[in-house]
Image (cartoon, rainbow, N blue to C red; front, side, top):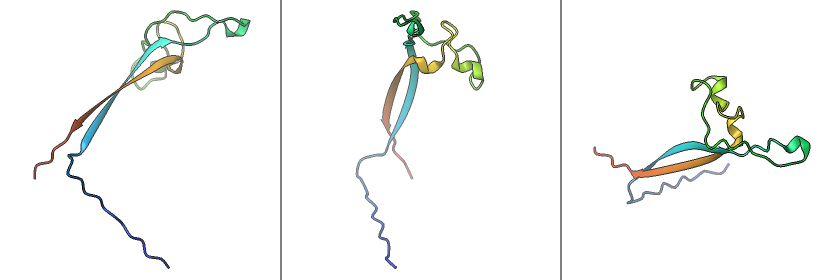
Length: 85
């Protein structure tokens, strides 16, 4: 039986914490795909139809599409976290 060796790296840099903000932009659904064309509805931003945690929160109030059809924009903020002890 082989023994496992664990290596712990210690860094002089402070640990970082990242915060992700996700925003859904314009609708990209091709509404004319069933007739062989290409047309989007012009919806510029996702607006939830219902409260967070409900099924209707994933449907856009402006265009009626699911949230996945809207362009996903992720903003990540990182900050250093110092522990005092």
